[in-house]
Length: 530
Image 1: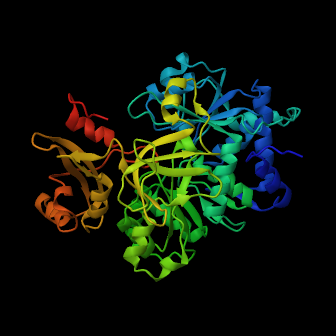
Image 2 (image 1 turned 60 degrees about the vertical axis):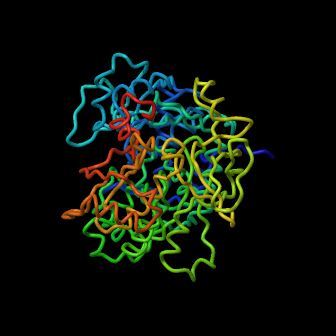
Image 3 (image 1 turned 90 degrees about the vertical axis):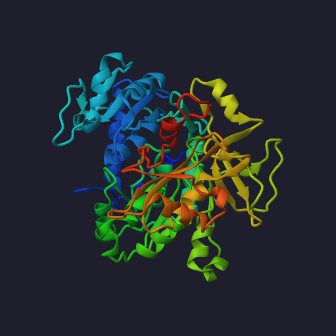
């Protein structure tokens, strides 16, 4: 009586039990689960007619729209593999990914056709399907998505596909900050169990209204594309991150759950409208992608009334491996203490497997909140490996454990707290300095909007911390005042030695800071560039 673990089965369940429930809201368009199911089945028929078979790869470059949601189900229920593309990558990276992934077909939003136009002749694609967008035109040769579906109405349904839970469901490429993007092979089983963690630990209910602020191409929306359907809850699509619009949707669509990087949280709390509204639904918001500061979590809870949930993972782990479990005993602590707890990455989730922090010799660090080590993990959600890259796979997975490259401590209660990425740790005069610790202090300063701390070369100490800061509008704080503020809130040797004020910081499409781009400015020609 074995049944393969696949998140695709949740669509079947949702259509069966909630046919008339609103499944998807995308601006002015709404679809019930029955309608959503019909559209995904039409997409499967159209793709099958176009020659897509079990095991074939289909690339998709779409923002958070109902089309993107349809692709996750319509492609994968054929037994084909979806390759979600980050539409903010360079033309060169996109060309590499499409060809390296062996994608046979591309589904692309008309707004993002520009890079594809540049390299159309060099792509190994059999066909391109284009989602038309008002106000945009493309010279690409392709078929219109709606026509693609409409034609499929007259076609026979594809043969029923037997799914092996260990076969690939999606091929998700990393952003390739220091080398070519790597294709992370994620299975049906891994996606199912990650989505189960999403369901359980984020408390997803049938009546939830989920806002897709997080790009769906990023680790499959962290699993939200599957988990919300599993509960028969409602997906609300968001084409791009627009803080005033998000705050409007909180009120007008009764949003109860969302996910986003700390950068998105920062954008929301600093939007002028944030202090003008009262969000009655008190949405739960999961944040990950970079360690959020305690000060930012506190602002989100006090200004917007958000119930912040800190989760942690990587694309290579589907991605959840830790979450900051909230205990009743924490309720009696001050708001400052609560925020500091919520800034920790936390403990293992129920369905992911084992995670721990180890020294270089492989021994686990003491649970004292002091000993620094690397986070490693093994279990149900770890990737099958990097596509067509066994050497890099073997370097990342050693003795059955995936090595994250994140440096952390383990507190006496077992909660893991990241101190830094291995490449972001600042070693000044032999002392380890956490860039995230300095950033956490800086976010407590009322004039700081955004910040990134990196190491810069120093003749005496080898390297010292530099704070790069985006100020709040109208702020006039000086470098000396910032350094003095840090020195009064942390050990003097950890405080930044220099401060630079900038208009903006480089980020990925998911809101993660790209520190390597900042380091390149100061370490060019030396060893420490990445």
